[in-house]
Length: 272
Length: 285
Image (cartoon, rainbow over all chains, first blue to last red; front, side):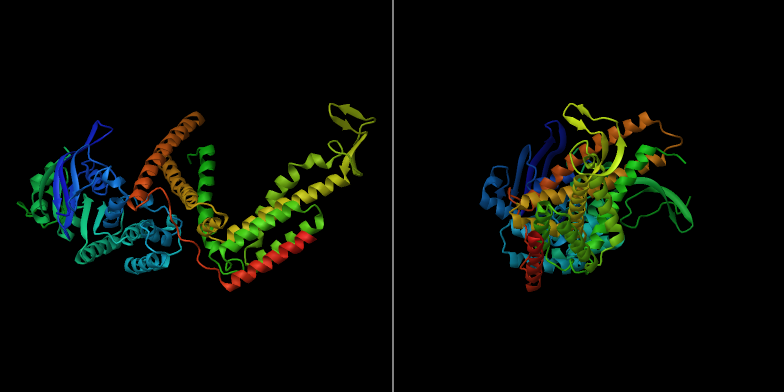
């Protein structure tokens, strides 16, 4: 297995639980989603997978090697791990800290001691791929939310990681950028990259047809299954607080019931 | 209309920061003479000319530099009116208004040029000698003129470089003076967060205003500002932690590595030589 988590616990300040006994396995080249309501521990889990936080208890292994604070102090393992794991933060403003877009794309490769020429080749290639050629010399604070997200993803892609961790990637994006992101994730996965997404956007998980782990509000893995298995289980989604009951329209008629917006739902009564 | 004057004023200033940032970006992308020069040459030019301006003791060379910089402004197709309004205001405040008393023969002796007041007799107060006739001296006027020219020249030189160079390039050019990359990143982040937090402040104020039904008392307003300041501080701390994680995630190991500005074109070398030549001429004047 590429990534393995065994009974991982994580508490903030030793008091506030964020993860309680999470066990997961993610294989090479998989599309994997971690879904759950706000505060269920998705981002914490992703940060553990990127070696930014370390479990209070339990174990995290990457390609069979334990990832701990101590193991990442070893320069060789740190480089091995950072080269292979790429993390796109939910808040692009946190991720973009260099003077210009081009510097942002070069930052990762240069930190990995890749030659300047190769780093520039990678940056130019990623700029074309992400459609951000025209932004090359722009300061990142002058970009729109969609452009920032593209640059943030590009800044990770120039490191050419095996695994791409995306935290709430569609948050605050317009439909066009969202569609671009879905296409991009699929083509990266076709190229052999492992994709791990943390999101509460159920339609994204459905569009990408991922294997899904659902985190409950008790910070545990409630169920792992295919996207159709999870998204069609209305009771499970209700329990996890991921769907709700509301009124909506079908043509001129409206009615009220709970559903996930993802799959076409059956109606017991056609209209009220 | 509901208004909170002191808050309103502050928020307008905040908006100005963001707008001037965008304006600066647009301005620095134009295609004038100075825009096309390598940022390193411009930073070197600025440092060299600031030293020359500080060394000169006579009005003529200072005035010569002022004309030279004005010419560079014009050749760079910059808006002279807007730029010189700022420059002359700075020159007036720091070069005339603040040192104004030094023009009179109360603070320093000199040849009386323009009598202002007659006292009947001279007075000695502590270390000051107040003469019988108080007035403007020739030395005082000369001193003020030199100071005014120095301030306007320094402001004009700085604005010339700022208006024609993206901030990112100026920061990278600082590496020429062996400024570490980590410091460049810190300055970049500070500059960037100025924009992010001014936007946040503006939004917080608009959210407050949209829920106001009547006038807000000044005390309440001050309390609101203090609370928002605490909130912004907390937001900044959290953002700082996130940025550090983002840097670590992209292999930050305590040392930042950035690319430079690349090789310098022959044209930039010629421009550098011409500017240094002009500087030497002013220095020998």
